[in-house]
Structures are given as structure tokens and as C-alpha cells.
Image 1 (spheres, one colour):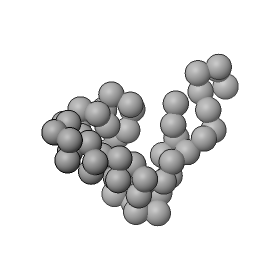
Image 2: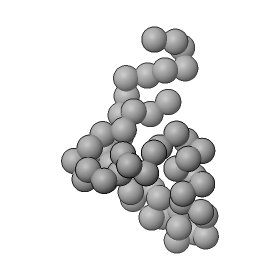
Image 3: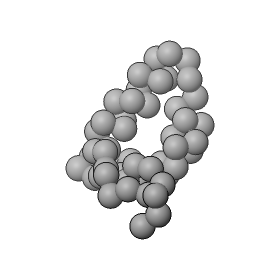
Image 4: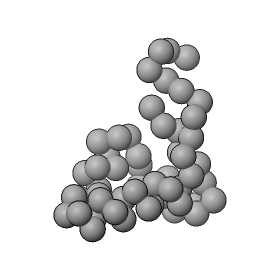
Length: 53
């Protein structure tokens, strides 16, 4: 594991909430998700976890 990698995760529900708030503020949530390395396919499992970097 390099210094920039981590084993930390966020729940899909948390990411969905962040993206929802971003959309409410006029931010393109698809662009935001892509910018932080979240693949939309990862968000289909409501009980899923996504690695953060």
C-alpha cells in the first residue's frame, strides 16, 4: 500500500447523501463522483462500501 492509498471506506448511503447535497447546490454529481474515483456501478448496492483515497 502506498502512502496515498488507504483501507478506509464510506458507505454507499453516505456517498449517495453527499452526491444528493451536491446536486441540490447545482453541482454535477456525476462529475464529482468521477473526480473522486467513484464508479456509478459501485452505488447500486445500498449496503455497499467504497474505498476512499
